[in-house]
Structure formats: structure tokens, C-alpha cells
Image (cartoon, rainbow, N blue to C red; front, side, top):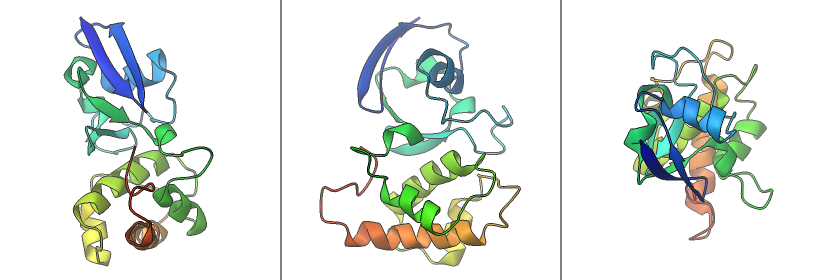
Length: 164
């Protein structure tokens, strides 16, 4: 099947098998290896990307389902070498250890903050419950999400207030 998709601001048209998962299309065809293959069962959330602005687990979406859509990966967040505010907050708040879950956590956080720009701790924990981390204990991730929320609220309009 032929698909046309915009990934991190670049348009692609490719022939794909109907059964190809979006995560494999992103990694193997487009080289977007920041999108991590975790469990392949949609339990861990490591493969989370934004599909038309909403977080999805790319191991549970077929590439053909993304036809005509815009996909943002963790690699598409930084602009001109400047990290997205959520990426910066994760870095500064030490919201990672091994880094395996980090891309998915960042993408899920961006979606959460687009829906709830000022979440309390419980709202962050609930909003990220589909993404698993086996290293951190989550406290720094929650702190990073709340810090990122503040950064985004304070950002001038039109400057990285969301993904591309």
C-alpha cells in the first residue's frame, strides 16, 4: 500500500506492507530510532509518538493508519538545536536513568500538557500511567512534567508551546 505521511516536518511517500507497524516504519524506513521498541504489546509506552498531536503507542498502530497524518517523534521536538521545554525539564530534573522509557515519557507528557496545562501530581501520574519506567520510581518524571508545564505556560506564544 502507498502511504503519505509527514514525520517531524518532512513529507514521505512510501510503499508499505499493510501489516507494517508504525514503530517499525519510523525506525527501519525513516531512521527515527529515538522511537524505542519496547514490549511490542503496547504495555510499556516506550514507542509513544504524537499522531496528529495526540500520543499513541506506535507498536499498536499500522503505518497505513498514519496515511495522511502528521507524526512527531522525540527527534522532531528540538528546533535549531534548542530542546523542547519538556525535553529540557526532563534533563534538568534528572527524570531518566537508563533512558529507555524517556522518549515515550516525553511524548506522553507533551500530550498530557496539551490537555491539562497545569496538572497536579496525581493528574501527572494518571496521565502517564500507560508509560512504564523500571528505573526511576517516577518522582523525578512527575517533577519534570510539572516543571515543563510551568515552562510552557511562561513561553511566549508560538515558541515551542507544543510539538511542531
